[in-house]
Image (cartoon, rainbow, N blue to C red; front, side, top):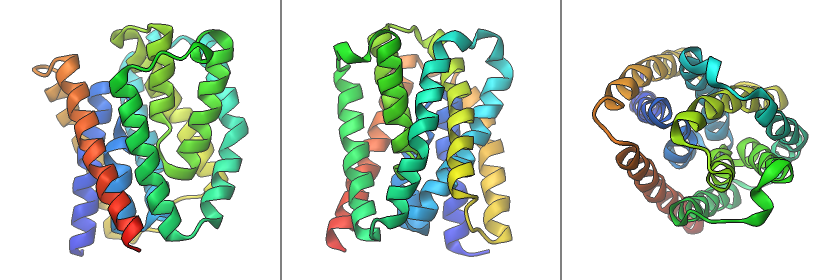
Length: 239
């Protein structure tokens, strides 16, 4: 077991805690760090795999609140763009992919912070636009959550309603992404620590939810994501 394996487990634990707490945020918190630890391509695969697992854990408790009719356009649109994202990610040089992940996460975070109001992200058409963008970004950079979050902001979904639907979306779209690209190439210690990170994050996230407000949790997610995106951007630009 190497230092990189331990760091991988710690990063997954942090991301899983955030995802269990807020419904999204695993990739925002972990994608930059995973890209630096195992490379951008493998980092996205690890993010897809772990995000699907922790979303499934969260969905287990809240599946009764999933609005299938509202989620169907989002999921179908994402399914159409996941292959395109996988194709792009497989052909970009590592330096370009690192820079792209850093820029995409930073811009997404700033848009969510600003609570961007976009007319095209409302109604059924907005669901299709958000789902298509999210599917492409999830498959190519591992960060499909912000597009879903922006749609939820514009659709005025309350947090209690958003979380279980985001978990459902996370399971389905990350499974699409893994079907298009396969599983990450990790040694046995890496898989073990990934599983432990997801399990530990599920527990930690639930405990944090008992004393952190929605606003505090949101600030934590966005702050960590912004720092990580800037570090990844610097790494990509430095080459």
